[in-house]
Amino acid sequence: MELWVRGHVALGLALMGLLVLCQMEGSDGLRFVIDREECFSHDAKYQGDTIHVSFVVIKVDSSWHNTENGVDLVIKGPSGEQINDIRDKTSEKFEFVVQKQGVHQFCFTNKSPYHETIDFDVHAAHFTYYDQHAKDEHFAPLLEQIAKLEEALYNIQFEQHWLEAETDRQAIVNEGMSRRATHKALIESGALIGVSILQVVLLKRLFERKLGSSRV
Image (tube, rainbow, N blue to C red; front, side):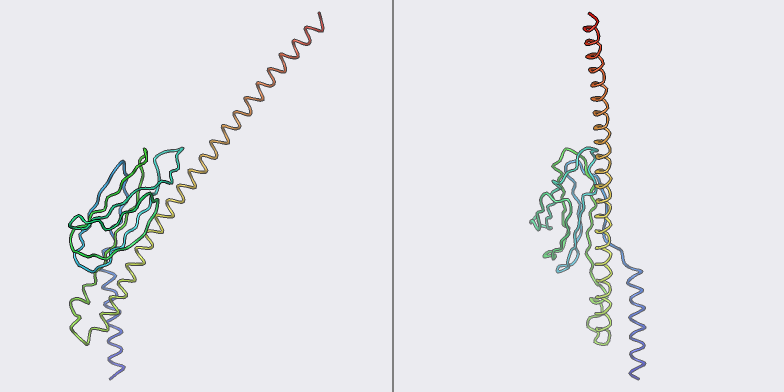
């Protein structure tokens, strides 16, 4: 009898795990170009939920400028209260607990004179399975495991998105540095060729003057 119960619990856990995978909506990741200021909102429907936030400045729209000043991000709650204030960051990842349900505002400010591309991600997972059936003692252990599985899957998805954005940023930075190094080498080569030609011309004129003087 005990083995039969364990088998059904394992089967139920597997089926519910598949249901979690099918119903995962994912995190609200987006990539946008900012000029001066951009604001976004996220509706936190449950008090006590943990909101995970990340952003990465992917690139700057300037061939010769590599900014490290970053951007500012101010987060405000439903009543306008300030939750977080981040200054001059090119990449950041953090979390906070919802104190009051409602619409939260995320406002970015770009203080550089160049347009910047930002990857922004907000993740707030709420585990409705446990809420709906927490009073059922028979399902409580199963639902607790499902909630942990769902939370782990969301966290992996969130971390993966942030790492992909960081990888994109580093690739663009490396490409920009390579391009600038190539341009610098070309300019230095051109300057060296120009100086060499000037030296040849000056030496030729000096030789001609000396040759003329010796004939006289």
